[in-house]
Length: 229
Image 1 (cartoon, one colour):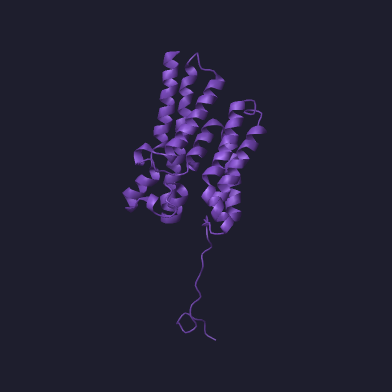
Image 2 (tube, rainbow, N blue to C red):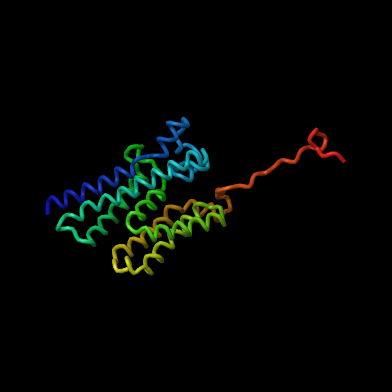
């Protein structure tokens, strides 16, 4: 029993340390010579990297943040070989690992406790627990982003859909812990996006375009390329 508690505690601490890996800060300093927390929205996350440094910088940050959340949760599966750990115990430990990983991203021990909002890490962690719900939320996020071009709005709506997908899923709606977890996640996403909600209300929130149509400049009429009349 003591060994089980020790192992579970170690897993939660490991999840926090994984979440504390400041990929945006390290990539910004190593390859671009800047501290991303001093630019844009001052968040060490994918969205701010995209706004300030572009897709080439944002994609690896998202991949790493997603991966650290995913690994922090899936490593809990190693404890299922303990006779004292049941299925519900695994779910509860995974939920604890989610909070630890996201907390590590928001308050990273390796970057002076100044991190981001933890959305990518949260998505990776939820994918590690129940991939179908994560994929459905990603679909909602992508549709809203394409329509509105607001990452913050897309994240909040997708987060609010998470408990809906949880409650209608027969595989996980029997776990009151997971259902409660899904509601808490939705509320936390709203709380952590308070400033974004204010900017959306005031109409000054920055937009993100996944792709833009290439504009072909019209040649001046007095140039050699202008069509002859």
